[in-house]
Length: 287
Length: 320
Image 1: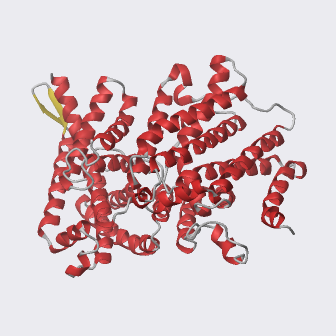
Image 2: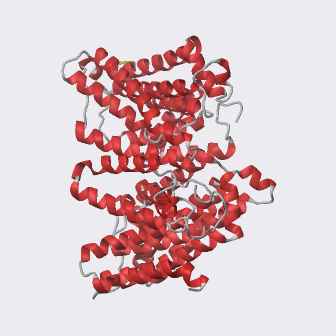
C-alpha cells in the first residue's frame, strides 16, 4: 500500500511538471493556432539563461524574473519576425518548416552557448528528505509541486482577471470577431507567444534545483506537451493541468508494473486511443 | 522537336547523367554523397504523395523506412533468406503497416494527424528497441549487403536508380492523373472534396500505400549500404522530419521538388557539417527559415519562375 501511494505521489509530482510545460503550449495553440515544434527548445533556452544568471551570482528569484522578461520579449520578436510573415502567406506546411528550423537552430545554439553537460542549480534545501510514517519525499519535489501549482493558478487568474488575459481569451475564441471588439489580434498573438515561452521557461527554471538538464531534454517535453494538450481537450487550462497529472501517473505506473522502457511509449498509446475514442479530450466538452 | 521529345528531354538527360556518374566519378566519398542524395530524393518523392499532393503532413514515415531496413536484415539473420526476398518482405510489411497506421491516423486532421503519425512511428521504435531477442534491441546489428564487391559503391548507386525512376514515374502519373486531382482536392478542403464525390478515406490510403512501399525499399537499400540497422539510425524521428523537409522545401506537390530538395538539403547539411562543425545545425535551421520566408513555394519556384515560358502542366494552384 505504501508503495502504491509513493508511486502515485511520484506520478503526480512528474505530472505537475508536465502540466506546467503543457499549459504554455495550450496558451499558444489556442490563441495563435500555431503548433510550435520548438516550444520545448525555447523554454529550455530560457531555463539556461536563468541557470547562467543564477550561477554567476544573481539571486535565483531575480535570475528567473530577468530570464522571464528575456523570454517574453524574445518570443514576441520571433513571432513577429519569423512566424507572422510566413503565416500570412497562408501555408500551414511552411509554418511547420519554420518551427522545425527553429527547433534545430535553438537546440544546437543552446549546446554551443551553454555546453552539452548536465546542469543544475544547487539549492541545499532541495536535497533534504522529509516524510511521515513510512513515506519519504524530497523537499525539492514538494517545492516544485507547490511552485507548479502556483504557476497554474497564477496563469488562470491572469487569463480571467486582467485586460490582457481577456483579450487573449477573446482571440482564442474567435480570431475574426476579436478585432471588431477593438482587440489588436497581432499584438495579442505576439505577446501570447512570448508569454507562453516565458511560462514554460519559468517552469523549467523552477525545476533546476531538482532535475538535471541538458540541451536534449526539450524535445521529449514538447512531445509530451502535445499529448497532454490533446488529452485535456485542446485547450482549457484545467484540461491541460489534469491531462498532465494523468500522464505523469500513467507513466509512473507503467514503469512500475511493466518496465521502465515502456513508460516512454505509454503517452503515445494514450494519445492515439484518446484521439480515436474521445477526440474532444478526456475533460473537454466541445470538440 | 516533337512534343514528346520537348517534354521529356530534361528527364532523359537527368537520368542519363546520374546513371553515368559511377563511370566518371571515382571518388568514393562523392559517390556515397550522391547516393544519399538519390535515396533521400526517393524518400521525398514518396512522402510527397501523402504530404504534398494530399496535404497530409506525415511525421512518421521513418516507420516504413525502419520496417524495410529491419525486414531485410532479420529475414537474412533469423530465417536465412536471400536479402532481396527480405527487401520484398519489407515492402509487403510496410504496406500492411501503412494500412493499419493509415486507417487509424487518417481519421484525424491537421496537427492531430501529424502528431498521430509521429506517435505511431515512436511506438514502433520503442517496440523494436525492446525486443532484444528478435531485433538486438537498442544496440542494433549489422545489415546484410545487397551487392557484393568489387565496385560495391557503383552497384549500390545503380541499384537506387531504378527505384528513383519508378518513384519519378509514379509521381508524374499522380501529378497529371485524376487521382492526383482528387488528392489535391483533399488537400485544399476535405469537406468540399467530399461534397464533389471524392472519398478522402480511400484516396488518402491509396496515396499512402505506394508511399510506404517506396519508403521501405529505400530504407532497405540505405541500411544495406551503411550495413547497419538500429533504432537510433533507421527509426529516428529525425529521418521523418528530414524527408518531410526535403519535399516541402524543394516544392510540395511537384515532381521535381523533392529531387531539388534532396540535392539542396543533403548537400548543404554535408557542407555545413564540414565547414561549421558544431554550428552546422544552427546554420541549417536558419537556412530552412530563410528559404521558407523568401521562397514560400519551395526551391523549385526559382526555376519555374525563370523558365515560365515552358508550358505548365497541372491545375491552377499546384505550384503556389
